[in-house]
Amino acid sequence: MTLEQWAAAGVVLGAMLSALTLAVTVSRPLRRLARQNEEFRQDWYGVPARPGHDAVAGVPERLRRIESRLDGVESRLDDHLRSPHGGQLSPSIVRHMRTRTEQG
Image (cartoon, rainbow, N blue to C red; front, top):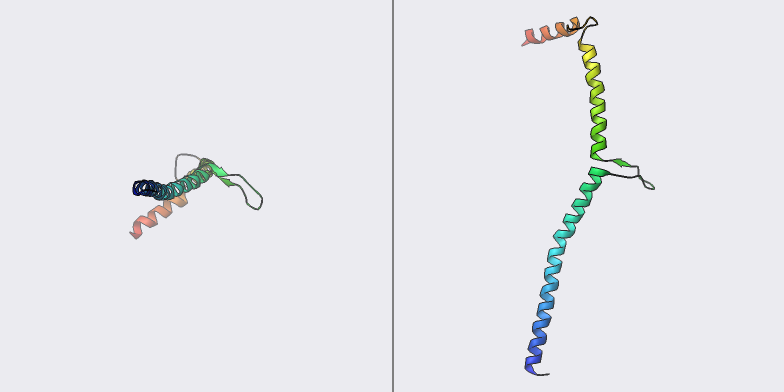
């Protein structure tokens, strides 16, 4: 082989190593980003049950559950705060509020 052929082979080898280094350098953050994306999607959409693991509900389902529980709490609280005759706070709540304002 001539010197020119060795030089050309060196340039090609250097270019290949540079491309490989660039590919490895770029692929690490991309793999990390893909993993984070997958974790987010599992959190958002939920995970079905599989052997040895229970199903995990996604965010929309969990929000629906929270909202329905909150509706029940609001309803019970509203029933508790109002007297049976409607429109007025129950006497126990009024007494409690007065003692709180008197204390300070």
